[in-house]
Amino acid sequence: MGKSIAINAGSSTLKFKLFEMPSEKLISSGAIDRIGLSNSDVEIKYGDGEKFQKTMDVNNHEEAIKLVLDKLLSLSIIENYDEITGVGHRVVAGGEYFTDSVIIDDDVLSKLEELSELAPLHEPANILGIKAFKKVLPDVISVAVFDTSFHTSMPEENYMYALPYKYYTEHKARKYGAHGTSYRYVSGRAAAMMGKPLEDLKLVIMHLGAGASICAVDHGKSLDTSMGFTPLTGIMMATRSGDVDPSLLAYIMEKEGITDINEMINILNKQSGLVGVSEVSADMRDLEAVKADNHQAELARNMYMNRIVKYVGQYVAEMNGVDGIVFTAGVGENDIGIREEIAEKLSYFGVKVDSEKNHIRAVERDISADDAKIKTLLIPTNEELMIVKDIERLK
Image (cartoon, rainbow, N blue to C red):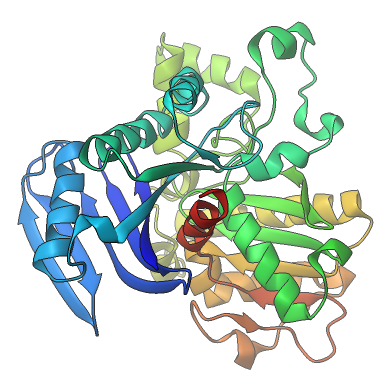
């Protein structure tokens, strides 16, 4: 019996969960924010509601990982490093190289560095986390688990763009999607809750977090998904625009005197979405609190739901029907009003939630009304559990 740790490294963050395996018991979890900046926030949860918190300077990911490992020892969460028998890393982009999770070796690492341009906001940080852990725990198996691999089952007509075909053959310009690890976990739980084999079900899953996407899961496989070549496109998100007419970008750049396309892409990634429209906040809770007196906050919220409903309807049509829809991730798990309003907008094909069942946050539950034709499920995602399961599978 050993312990596996799931790592999610961002550009200035490091999140982890430590599980006892194969029992899948969560032992500890934590996060370090503001890595490379002053006053990094460190939080580690363990035991029976115990918590370590400290604000300190953490200069890089290697320091962050050493800090986590040292605290696992000093807090008696583990007795020695030998207890850690596997490290799993969330990696955003696997491109066409990786259709499944994989044990990390030099060849894999080289390919990940090559793929960095597909997810420039995420992949370099993922690689930093991998290298830092390899340095601190060189003999422990490391596994890369890809956000994109679940979507490699998409048919060609869904992942290709209507561009000159040579852009695909020469530059791999295509839809890759994201949040695949979440979709794998949630679709499996949905099948268990519905008491049917996943291979018999047609599901639309809404991963509604700060980064948000929707996926059509047809008989256990990704048929289509809203994110594209990068995680920028698709539905409206907290700070990302989602779908935008490319010609509009040239128009705005000319009007605003923007000469660097990277500046425009940064605006689409970090200054758009909920925060861009509302000019209030990227957090749906803040918009809900002021929407009655703030038109832009109400507009942002309505636009968010509008985009979701359009994609859900599209995917129901693609699959020629649906057995269930699922809400997951931060907004999906916690925003009672968003779930109810989206369900109302989808009532035309049999979606209906029970208000009393729906009045709950982040608890796995069937929230369908008794007379609903389509199941509506609330399933908190658990990407970290999928990551450590993949470590066990590949050992």
